[in-house]
Image 1 (cartoon, rainbow, N blue to C red):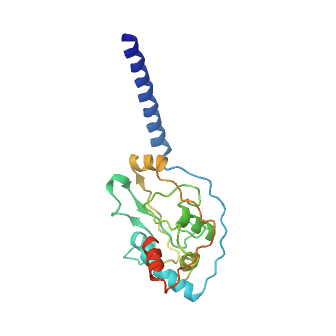
Image 2 (cartoon, rainbow, N blue to C red):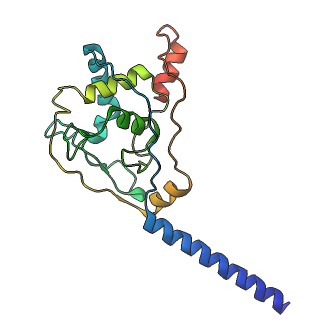
Image 3 (cartoon, one colour):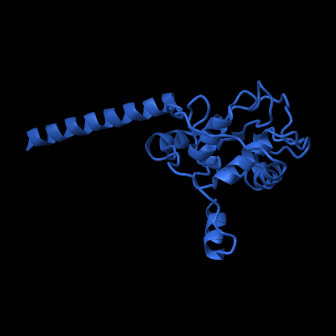
Length: 205
């Protein structure tokens, strides 16, 4: 009986050491990175696309990235993010080359919006909007607006504040939250007359 207790004790000790080692690894590693796979995207910017893109950005991006004082998408503290996730800041997404997305390619932007993988391969946790099911025409509209001469996106050299993700966020990003798969096929907008399909598209995206 004593031998059995000894063996079980050793096994439990090994298990505790392994779990502890993994938790230390997660804490040090932080948010994981992935290979930024190449994607195919051709921008077709038109006045109509820019106008629709402005509406979509206003609904999907401005809530976190818009600075009310400057009227620009320079980011800031995401106070709506649960405190359990840490201190989270939305980045500058104006056209500034140093602090914004000026050096990002259109493909970089689309990859991020579809999968959550940034230009440098770092994963963006779920508190950033991801749009795997967005119609290609709407994705084109968003990128068209971000590349437009609208005051919201004109280059602004305001440096990002670095987020301070909690251990919980780091842990979830290592075991549960993963990049979304990039769509294999084109995604089209539902027929406007098909109210059920259109409503489902709007609710999900």
